[in-house]
Length: 215
Image (cartoon, rainbow, N blue to C red; front, top):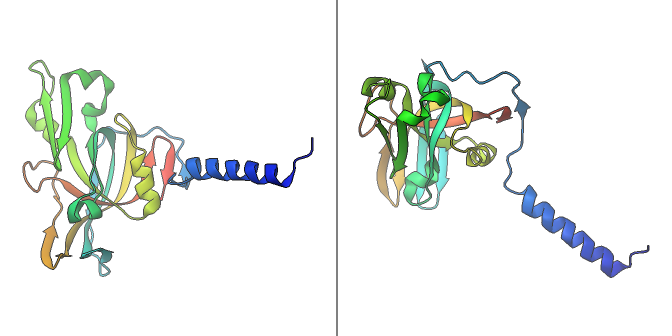
């Protein structure tokens, strides 16, 4: 069956439409991990001093991102919130609540519930929970994610609750100006602190989600 020019152009437009619809905003895979993600261990943090801070500029804002520690976490995601308003949302568009150790084991899900709101992370545990407050605090955390690039950003968008992940990069401090006003945002460097300032401000340069690796 011959196809005339009009039919050809129509078919081509349909193909391009679906390519655009399903091909855009998808992260590009850069590797594959074959081993099972080990969520039993604590995050690894090592001191890091950078002579080359990272600069980010947005409308009405200029920010310097300074790494203060190398950081790698393997855990299970128990909460995800996205943000877009104000300067914090431009710097860090996603928060991930992540647990590790025994909290990442499926049989303990029924004892604890997790939630996030306004950059805060909350948990509630049942009276019969095998974990006390101290264990939950030291094996869970809210991470303000700063994607190193657009591919990492798109990969982070695909993360769902219960996904097992490995995230690598730096804990950072942010300093700058927004609408001509000075702003600062500092990371926590402890896994046992609570309250205001206890979240990790995490510049992610590599992400593994299940077996998929993105950089």
